[in-house]
Structures are given as C-alpha cells and as structure tokens.
Image 1 (cartoon, rainbow, N blue to C red):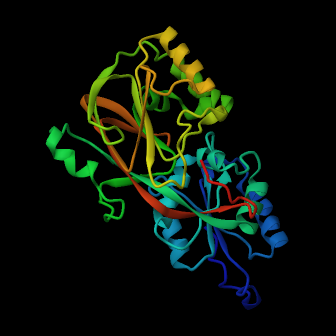
Image 2 (cartoon, rainbow, N blue to C red; image 1 turned 90 degrees about the vertical axis):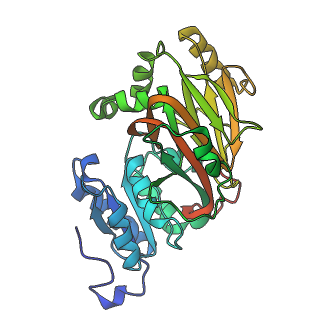
Image 3 (cartoon, rainbow, N blue to C red; image 1 turned 120 degrees about the horizontal axis):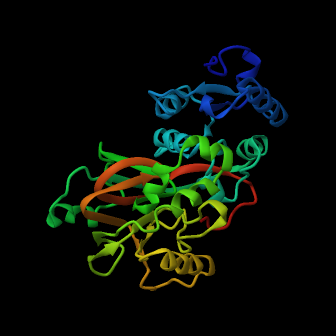
Length: 341
C-alpha cells in the first residue's frame, strides 16, 4: 500500500488526487501498471495515483472508505466486477465519484456506459478528464430462509429513500437466481483467464437441461405471479458480455429496475430464446416475461443458486430488490449527455 497522496510534496497539494483500489491478483506486473497510471496522471495534471491493494479479507469496501475519508477527488477500482461493486459500496450516497478501469472479464458497468474496456490507460484518461453523472444503484437482500408470502409485502412497496438495511448489498448491473447464477458459480477463474467471456457460454451449455423451479414474483408486474422458471434476472442495466442486451429497456438513470423471468424447457427452447434476445423479439413471449418496477421480489420454494453482479452468492430462497435513484457518481466523457443503459 502506498502513502496517501497530498502528504508529501506541498506543491502537489493543489492538484487533484485519485485513489486506485487494485486487486493485485489480476495482474502479473503491478509495478508496470503503477507506472502506466502514474504517467497518465502526470499528463492530465493530477497527483501520482494512490494505489491501495485489496485483500481476501477486504475486497475493496474498506479501501474505498479510507480513500474517501482521506479526501481524494476520485476513486477508481481496478479489478473485476466484484472490485467495482465493493468500491461502489463505500461511494454510494457520497459526492466522491467512481472511475471505472477495466481489470476483469466482464467490466459490465463500463460496457453499459460505453467506457473503454480494453485499455486501462484510456479508461483512466476518461476518469480524470471527464465529468461526473449520477446513476441508479440496486439494493438486494438475499433470502436465507423461505419466507411466507405476507412477510415480504413491505418490500414490494419499499420506498427508494428508505435507509439501507444491514443485510442489503448493492448491485450495479444485474442480480439473478437460477441458471445464470449456476453458470457464474461453475466457471473457474482459470478458464475465464484463458477464454475470457466465452467461458460462460461453455459453462451454460452444460446446464441447458437443468430442471426449472417454482417462483413467486411480486413487484415489476401488475399482480404477483407464480410460475416455473429456469432463471430470474433483475437489472439496473441490461447489456452483458458480447454486447448482448438481455434487458433492452433497462437504463442506469431511470429510477427503476428491469428484469425478466426466463422459462425455456430445453436446448431447442434455449436456442429460440437466444435468437429472441439477439433480435429483440421477446417482449411478452411465453419464454421471456419482462419485469419493471422500483422494487422486485423473487421467492422460491427451494434453495436456488444466486448471483450479484456476477459474484456467486450460494443457494438462497430468493431475492428482494429495490432501486436507489441517482445514488452514485460515475466519471464519463465530457460529451456523454445521453441517457445511459
């Protein structure tokens, strides 16, 4: 861990300061990365970057809080989507913006914002020279036990300005329960490192025959619905790896969550659903039921694998989600003034 910026040369105190919360396991030569980041900071008139390494015990939450408490102007996670989520956890509700640097397989929030995902230096230039815009954040409560239907009625009407519960986690992109989470849990880091995002496709092919599960969905629909499903997705934005927009109506700044109940029956049905997704022909389709609302709750009758922003969360009895509108500042290019996905 390096020394906080602004504590050395007094002449640098007037320059802006950036903390980079880095997952060291993602890089073979961290010194090279440090040098590249330092050069960009010099070019843009910022202080040397303050690199703070994550650990197995703290994936970025404490490091980001330390940076905010030190008064930095910008915090940039440099790791996978899990590092981004951990850092954002400490920035939600503050005036300190997040700058997105690509360091993992997904880089999903950056993809949805149209930010650089192939070059750390290009992404840092955007973060240092761009402007801050507010985006929504999702909150998710992972249900460890099967609740009664009435127990979650409060969540369906939860106000988006309610205080965050201790058992709620943030999500920036998407959470889900079912096959999508099984794919995340079943894809090894080693395979992802070799193949990149196609590793998820290979993992998914082995799970097409998985039996469905009974689910009750409330919120996001005119009335609560009970049906069998293979997976249920709830998103703050809708673009996945490969540019696939599984939730085309999702926007990062619309003050609501979007989602879908997916219910294909086998490989041919999965293939048809995949074609529907690619061609945007699935609205109201029996295999794909869209959801949209300020809060969406999913309850299952058995433990089902769950994921949050691609991180496996183990088997749960459902998800209770809600949106926090305009809760996070993200650095984007100066010319970016259009609604975000």
